[in-house]
Length: 100
Image 1 (spheres, helix red, strand yellow):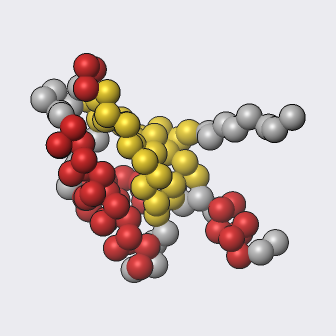
Image 2 (tube, rainbow, N blue to C red; image 1 turned 135 degrees about the horizontal axis):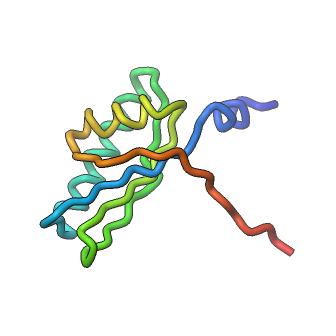
């Protein structure tokens, strides 16, 4: 098994849910920037974590983020370090359709 495969095997995907009255696109973009910086800093310090992406649902006042990390604690810490609120973190499974 190569190193990239071994690293991928040790990471899990987490969905971070934020129910955030008043959130708008500008606020959501700042959350993304903060998460990116926090993830890069933690990774350079030896704790691998990746902010895969975030989704803003303005009508529902919700921001969802996908985080890849070794465990829920690391996913929580990257959010704390980014100084962004969260309501829930749930383990998630990424599904891809197979090519035919």
